[in-house]
Length: 270
Image 1 (cartoon, rainbow, N blue to C red):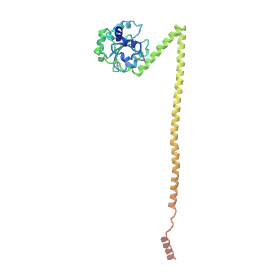
Image 2 (image 1 turned 120 degrees about the vertical axis):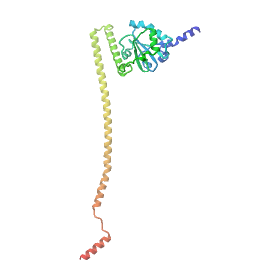
Image 3 (image 1 turned 180 degrees about the horizontal axis):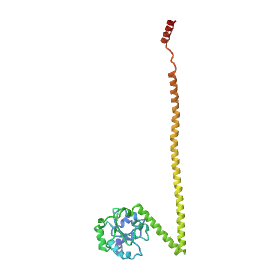
Image 4 (image 1 turned 135 degrees about the vertical axis):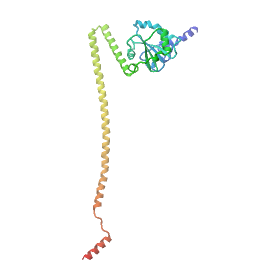
C-alpha cells in the first residue's frame, strides 16, 4: 500500500512515457517531447517554451540539466509548458522554424513566436518566462512564422532533402555502391517519380476538363431546344396574324339600306 502511494505521483510521467497521456494533459511542470504528430496539439493554446536540440550536440547536452530543472521548477507558471524537439527525428519541424544553430529556443504564445537569444542560465530563463520578457521584443516576422504555408512547404522540402541524404548514406555504407553511382540512382529515381507524378497530374487535369466541357455542352444544348420549341409555338400566331390582315383587306358585304340607296341613285341617273 505504501509503495502504491509513493508511485502515484509518478503515474502521469509513466503514462506519458508509455504514450497514453495526451499532450495537453502533460502541460505545466513537465518536459514534453514534441514530434510532427503532436505538433498540432501545441498550437491549441497556452504558452510553450521549446528547445531544438540534437543528441550529438555538445552545447545541447550542456543545456539539458538546466532545461530539466526549468521544467521541474516550482516557480514556473502553470500555463507554461517546457518542451523539446529532436531535429534528427523531426526534420520538417526544424525546417519550419528554420533552425540554423543548436540549441535554439523559441516561445509560442497566442499564435506568435519569439526566438530567445539571451542568457541561458536557469535564473535568466525562469525570469524570461515568468515576466514575459519576450513580449517586449518584436515576434518573428510573417515570413518566418512556422505555421505559414510557405514555411511548412520549406519544412517538407528540407525533410525530403535530409531523407535523400540518409538514403545516399545507406546505399554507400550498407549496400557498397560507389558514391557517384548512388547519386545517379537517386537522380534517376527522382526523375522517374517526377515523370510519373506529372503524368498522373496531366491525366487528372484532362479528366476534369473533359467533364467540364461535357457540362458546358449540355448547358448550351438546353436553351437551343427551348428556343426551337418556342419558335414552333409562335408560328400559328404569325399565321393567324396574316389571316386577320387578309380579312381586314377584303371588302365587307353591303347592307340592305346601302343597296336601296344605290338603286335610287341608279334610277335618278337613268
